[in-house]
Length: 364
Image (cartoon, rainbow, N blue to C red; front, side, top):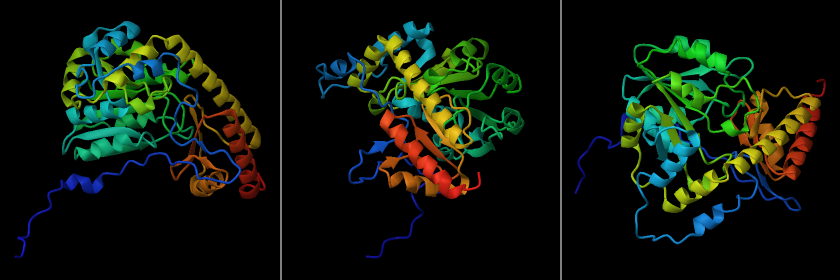
């Protein structure tokens, strides 16, 4: 029997959706310890109490608390905001996806920096929205003036990333306030602060403090980075209740498991240690940046747990040089992002960078 010809079951928007590409694993090289510096993962061991919380008895047949009530209460106490200002999801990624679901549809527009976190574009495309990426400044910071000018009557969502992934610079408090003064109240602004704990620049905007001044601002934070719980998938949004109530509608039920919720609570109970470890990583980052600059590299302001090398067309060649030394870095074609890892890993990257510069920039 000949099957009847039918239309494709897939949405036309899928044709423009980029596939998210995770950081690669390091290649095996004889005699070398492999290091994965491609996913901005926390390289220190878990805090005491976290593994014990994960190991606590859980009934696999029982659903977790869909409201993550205990974790929401713990976050409320830590952040000093009411529980109706908080929504918990499976990592910052689910929160960002939910925000796109509640704002975007065909004909709607989203404005975001480029390069930045790939999910902004992907989530927008999945909703059939028109995307307006805005290039960064010469210092690889958000071009907030141009982003404000790009907002039209069809714009529903603006994404900001501070520190910006993958380039590293933050948005200053003054820059943020100037930008927000230009944004219509009917446009939702997402401030993605996945790496806020690593910031050492006192001029950087504090999203939590800014929430008091803007009803159209939503803050996205995560336990994946400084808390070292990336594998457990826990992120959260903080905003006024009228935003949070809509976000909760778009979250997948039961997406945050019971062990994940317990681990996050245990980590919050040791938040001073979390912040101290983040400062340790920031110190390593600053030393790494100084060493790269001493070799002659033009490294932008680094305020997260990674460093960006703007290599342009040499990005793949640099990645290949790292692969040969059992190092995995993130090649984004116009540059390479290097996560901060163990001391031996950073020392090896510096050796690769020095040799690469000698070969490719002989007159520099």
